[in-house]
Length: 282
Ligand code: AHM
Ligand code: MG
Image 1 (cartoon, rainbow, N blue to C red):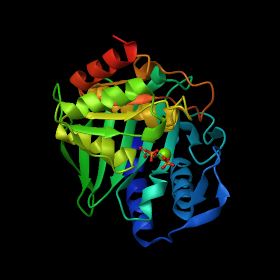
Image 2: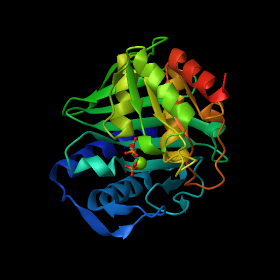
Image 3: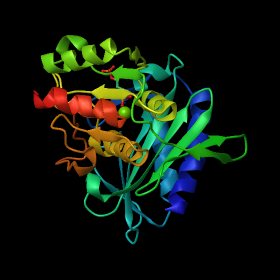
């Protein structure tokens, strides 16, 4: 696991440099789910694959940018699922974006996620690493290495609300939930990048991020293996929770296909209780 985490640090520095100096704009190709890829998406994906090839413990990888599983080392133990550059719609406008990694052993499902990490490419370059059973830890790049900053811990309740998806397509119960949270005095914080939006909630000690199922996309938009489950571990180990629209922990999610999406809610305990009440129809 240490070898994977230190490789993620090297990857982070390379992708950070790519974002700062690489070409903007779209390529001529689409990924497995039909999104047109940015040049940066493709190059970030290549960086990660080339770096992970040299880590013997990685048996295989699955990238958001590719269709299936790719075997790297037949004797390896782990499968790493990653979104090389999350936030394609905002990176060319110079907002913060990120990379997300889930480290699985065995069948690819929430229960087999052993660790996760995400990188925030913002004014600062930061990584949050989470190992199952212990608090997430924040690291910040100081120009030569990632220096440990602190353990990440959530309070019972936060002050910010990050409601994703197109409001016109929200179901009435979701609309009512979001409205009631704003009525309690929560402030809107939504950049369109799940990495900085979730990072802000984790570091500020609480709040709610939601990406619900909608009339046009009943299973939401965010992908389970690369995006949702890795963050679910960070929220759980920070003392919060991450659930789907049935109130079930996202760490129990079993995708049928690597690119499956799921409605998702991440928050501190108080906000997640509110989601459960709103969605159970009580
Ligand atoms: P991407 O993987 O194509 O970048 O899309 C994922 C992003 C998330 O970072 C973000 O939370 C979400 O899409 C925003 O979607 P919306 O604009 O529908 O709220
Ligand atoms: Mg993404």
